Image (cartoon, rainbow, N blue to C red; front, side, top):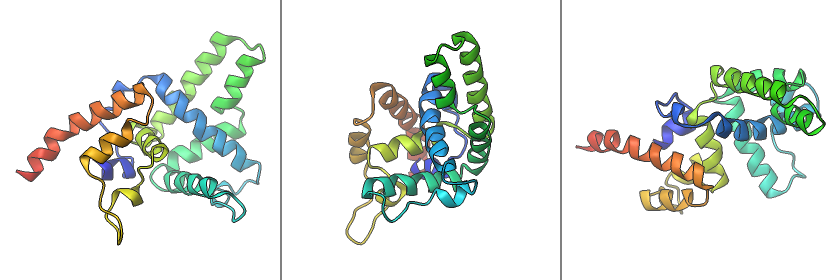
Length: 186
C-alpha cells in the first residue's frame, strides 16, 4: 500500500475523499509553488532546498520536490500554470477575503480541483503529503542500517497524528487494501 502511495498510483478510494479535502491539500501545494515562482521561472530547479533553509524547511522542500518532479509532474506543471494565471487556490481564497463574489470564486475553485484531479491529483498524492506531515516517508518506511521497516502498529499510531477526517480516510483506505494484501501472502 505504501509503495502505491509513494508512486501516487490511481486508487479506487479516490471518490471517498470530498472536494474540500482536496482543496485543503491543493492550497498547500499551490502556496508552495507560488513561493517557488517568486524565485524565478525555473520552478523545477527552485524546488530544491537552499543550504540556508532550516532543517525542517529542507525536509519539506525535499518532499515536495520528490512528489512534484516525480510521480506528480503533470499535476505540478498544471498547477504552476494555474498559479502564474492567478488561478492558484490561495489567490482565489484571498479574492473571497477581499470581497469577491463567493459563489463565483467557489465555482473557480471547484474547476481547479477538477483540473488537478484530471492531471493526477489523486488519493495517493493526498496520502503522500499527509503521511509526510506525521513523519512517514518513503525513506522512513523502509528498513535501513539502524532502522526497522514501518510496521502496521507504527503506521496506525502515526496516522493518529492526523486530523479526524484524514484519520478516517487513511484507516478506510488501509482496511480496503488489507484483504488484497492478506491474499497476496496466502
